[in-house]
Image (cartoon, rainbow, N blue to C red):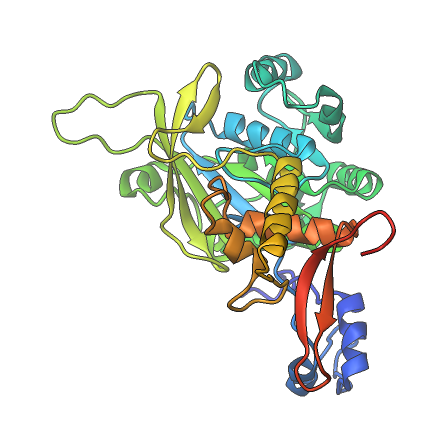
Length: 386
């Protein structure tokens, strides 16, 4: 690696400080920018839970690449995700973590985004139109959109004034998701130079870590990436520097069959924190993507899943079947996901609902039993406590 390449994103200071409560040992580093943590302190402290924007697909505090051939709909799919996050509704059968969204659009102008948004929300009366205020669009179509460029020597990438402006906007708005459309418009370096690819993604990942958000970057595959089915382009540094990579492309038709132009496949090509190889079949229908028949999952909103969680918890309690927030044989998200009335909601979505309800103090984890045999269970909190 070049001596000019940027260092990996630093470990968060707050997280390091929290380890001190568990007897962390630190060593004075030979360089003032280095931080060294003893593994013994990690063993003593509870590990931080991994957080997701879309469980199993798009992690928080990381950068995800979404590749797609020109015209296959990656910008539409990303806009649908932005709307789902902003309005706490479904995205192609998944339930993203709700929050604010900042979309950096250097490819489509506002009139085109307006048309697509109208198609996405058409007939979906459960989408709160006022909640769309949580989605902010930065219109850079036809304008200079470079976020970083190499210095005069062609080595170290320097972030542009535009990146500084976006960073300030992120600090002000505190979104959960930043969408960058596209890589070709915002990266001012050489796509085949590995160190520059890593530096650019490192810049975005530091933004994601600092503000605890997900960054989704849209990109076009090369001809070889399209031919091989990998969906990549340029240096291997792009794929190697992210923890999640998705690829939207038409499905391969059987020999002699005419392909359906309305069908697409979203494939998880890389997932460091989950299984790879998952393929979601999508159908373009009246201006938006929907899960293709046979690939449908629950399309409940986050609020609806919260209500379902409370309903199932109440039923389990009445039946004398205790469930817990701790992973094990009575883990509530697993029990509810496997229940006949779970309405096809997955374990991860129920886990997100449980976290929201605990945070809102609508449910609580209580401990019961003798000191030698303590057990915990989830209970619904009433208006006066438990």
